[in-house]
Amino acid sequence: MPDLSRDDLLAWPKAELHCHLDGSLRLATMLDLAEQQGKLAVLPAQDEDGLRTILRQIDDAETLEEYLAWFGYTIPLMQTKEALHRIAYELAEDNAKENVRYLEVRYGPILHTEEGLSLDEVNDAVLAGLKEAERDFGIRTGLIVCGLRDRYESASLAQAELAARYFGRGVVAFDLAGGETGHPPKQHLHAFYYARNHRLGITIHAGESFGPESIQQALFHCGAHRIGHGVTLRQAPDLMQYVIDHRIPLEICPTSNVQTHVVSGYETHPIKRYVEAGVVVTVNTDNRLFSHTTVTDELWLVHTRCGVGADALREVVLNGFRYAFLPWDEKQALLREVEAEISA
Image (cartoon, rainbow, N blue to C red; front, side, top):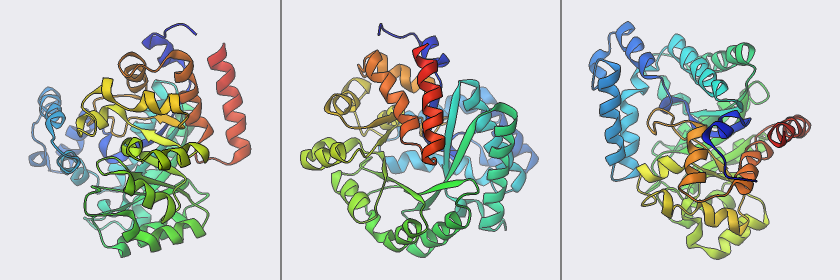
């Protein structure tokens, strides 16, 4: 397969498996919601150009924790049913416009209960927005509920219970997100035990800003089916071989990894090494707003700057469908359709 153009990648059907709802708002929506809710003071600027300029400063974040602090601009605007419905709908619409056929959105519902909404009300609003977008744009979606590393395990367990109540009704998996340092996955074992015993998919942020022992815990203590990021996997060859042998996918988010200084740049990102070694890799945005990116842009960067060739990139794109949290028959039907389109 010859080198690809960005237009080629835009035309390809794609899947997005690692996208945070609260990190993927439109700038115009942020301003509109802030004005409606009387929260303009929450924002660092009161127009799109100003916001765009200031949000570029996220690239200077020296740690993952500094990067995560930027969510303080979005989460306060996401405390009503109307806002959550709108943001979920628009995120699915934006993905559909770049030919993303399957989208998994993740978020921590507990973050959106600060003004009186219950966990169920929060989740209902997000699911309603996604389902409406499915009807309008033909995209398929799944929702991933996140426990939070810096909260008590009781909070993670409550969210695992929420995810289980909605399994089969739009929720597909349970996750653990937040700063890794000082917050190992094994501190949330009861939440993952509950999620696994209710047949939820398990994906865990691990090996992003911490070493491979975080990945080890995610796999062997918490039962992860996929690993969010997994950039530090290369530091543990035996663990990397296990991940290869057992076909455990990594949800790689290249721009986010550069922003949080997990890697020094695209050219030094280990994604090419992982692909060549046989690790199952998927490419994702993490946060469309904060990483100023799209699925197409991330694939383009992986091709042009990380050095992943066209044939290998095709397999990476297909991996997004192969390892989606979908029922087997539905996944195979979708995969056949996508393979035919990309081949054509």
